[in-house]
Image 1 (cartoon, rainbow, N blue to C red):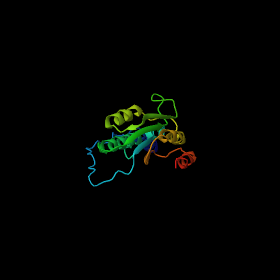
Image 2 (cartoon, helix red, strand yellow):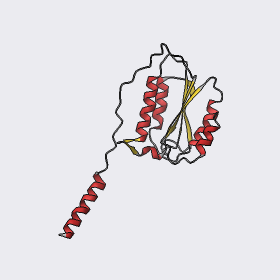
Image 3 (cartoon, one colour):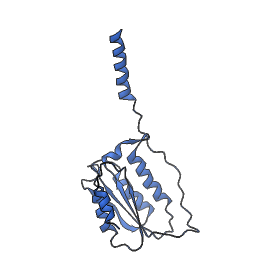
Image 4 (cartoon, one colour):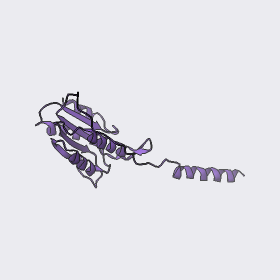
Length: 176
């Protein structure tokens, strides 16, 4: 009886290990709409996204891959930017799947006049997560990306913050 109970317990634990983890599902898409700019004043001239494409972004969070959640954020942010804004935008990534890039940081969209289709095309180029988390390399490179620009810049970092150390904080301080 004791052996049978141990076998049942073992089979149950093995089953939970194999099938008990929730399957990671794609992030549900939703309809976005452009923001009506009437009554608002544009505060920034430039938008730069720094995107974490490292291996920790391939892990699950609330039933989804963090990378999928982050990609949806970038997609929907782009879809809500009003077309009539005089905005320059760019996207720099760090930590890539080797099939995407072997570089620590890549400027997938050089800062230029914002185009919804150009922004989306750039976003689709880093569709796999992998590699290390050299956020400091990306932030140091952003300094050069932004150097020729005029006006205020919004810098949005999309990351899970894992395995970073203190180097990104120092690099961010150098941006001001």
